[in-house]
Length: 116
Image 1 (cartoon, helix red, strand yellow):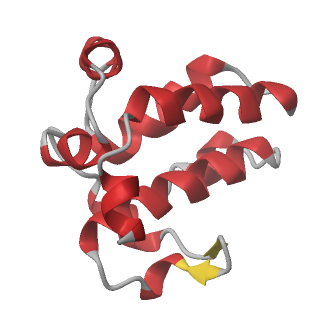
Image 2: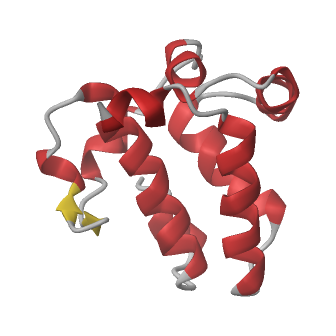
């Protein structure tokens, strides 16, 4: 199953791609970290630990301290699918993160990316 492959993928590998995407568009690694921490509740040290451990996506989200209560306000299309209509809870969290990084790379102001 395709989802199982994504769920078992190392978060650190995808994190590097998120950072590359953001930096190509003039954003910073710190901004990527800010978006990830907002969504997951990790602090900078916790995020760094997850990356260093090579945690997979499933564990990354299972161990997240506190998913942001406003994550349901994240809407839009990622990979041709509306994030708000994804049935699998883990896939939805992954796509929420993808959508936030997309918005960052597109130059959206941080105050709008981090839904109040």
